[in-house]
Length: 517
Image: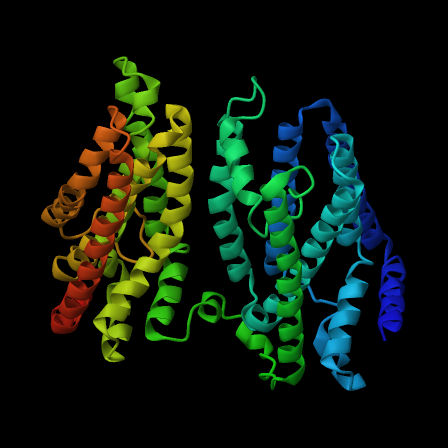
């Protein structure tokens, strides 16, 4: 069966050339870009014979770890149909073990697998050039290639089982955003390192850690002698065996479990309602996201807040405050205003709030659902703002304190906003009106100030330890971090609970307020 499936796989690769000219041009362009990128990486890896053994070990370990991460995550994002999906073999009556083995072997006859094998060969050549035994170099290359291919196969199986029914542009966008939250800070950190005197010590330390993990063990074992090399070899072999075991379990699950009905076409048109959990809070979150990204009144807030947080520092620069100090201000200010955005979100619903009240939705579900769009927008913005601020400040040791301060301000603002929007709503421009039109009623200054000042006051411990870390106390960095998480998390939980209780008890007054807008 393995030979038969392999022949079918090769036939599919050849059949991909039988397409319309426009499709062929796109495929050829993509293949050309991939080939050039792989060739450049291979040449760069082979030329590592000009550097020291430690530098070569560090660079190959980091490169191998990045490639393994890509093979594990990319299948979750693209959502492409898998031609080797084990469920396609159900009609043949084949044993799951035979299907699993055949699919793994046939997976090596693919463009990504061949590109990975080329990089693995280049790394093996570099390892041998630095004195590594040929046996260890070949073993490392094989383990690296198998880890990537089997890991991608497991990721595609997970995507087919867990994500296919909810695959949508919204879910793909969330995954890409989540990846960007991790990739962007990592890229800025690598760029900010001092490369003029060789490989930075921070990167070497990271490579030492990756060498003992499933991500980098296979690409680290050849150049690490003694106990470190043995440990990397054991971890690499255990990783391959573990992935093969997971793959076998996934194949058995996919071939024996009862399939759920294929979702009808209309479900895919539900957008965020198909992505969010089928709970009251999920439905409210989906409706809030649609409003936030479709209502000019919300969009105006999303645009103004980041700009305002940057403009605040302009007077400080004019009067001569150092850039390294000013760089730390925009991120906390942005976190404060992002948490403050939801302080009057109920008023923007106008009469639409009757849907929640008439359906008897729990107050906590309403409060949580309305915070989701702010979190979706706030977390990526803060990830970028914090990274850029610390980069400009040029002291990465302050990063935990900056994260703690921003978390405290952001979550405290969300918790207080959950109470304020129910207890003290005030009039805003009506749906369909311009975001800057003057409402018929004024007021709400007290609510705005209470949320802003309250978030700052509650975040004082984290701010104080952050200031201590900035002025030279290294131990205060983590105190600020944990204080921010605890204070922000507790404020958010308490605020959502109090706001939920107030929503239920003040439902009649909320309806009266909505009708008089």
